[in-house]
Image (cartoon, rainbow, N blue to C red; front, top):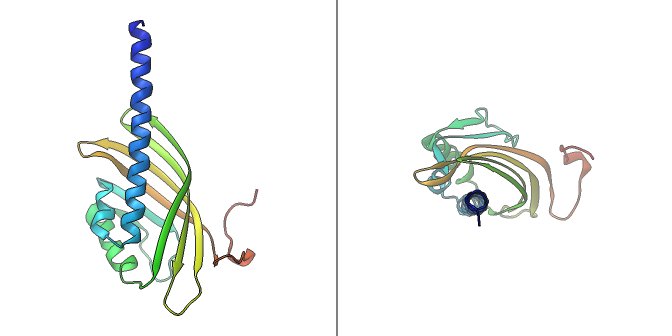
Length: 166
């Protein structure tokens, strides 16, 4: 095999390894969010990472952009951890593009939520992510979360759908 072909093969393998590391990074993010591990969620971000939750439309939450692990952990502690509920995130249909030490990702997400004494709810939308390879491995550089719908589990409600119609 020529050295050009070897370099090409090595680059392809590195890109595939990066993609799988990013998939595992997002799985870790989801698991830590579901168990309300604020510091664990923050650790999935680069030290100067950004979490943008404007698209979630959370009542009473005015600040929607958080920069740095400390700020990200703080918003999870204050907004997510105190809510008594069952929470299970699913990420799906990822589109990941790796460009050396940077990458981008576009994911669909679904969250199943059940609060005490209420019916189960389902919501979903998209994650638009930027990733960076750091000394700690791949980390989220920026995560923009947008909700497209909220509904009682299994009952489609067009009044609570705010995503794009195709």
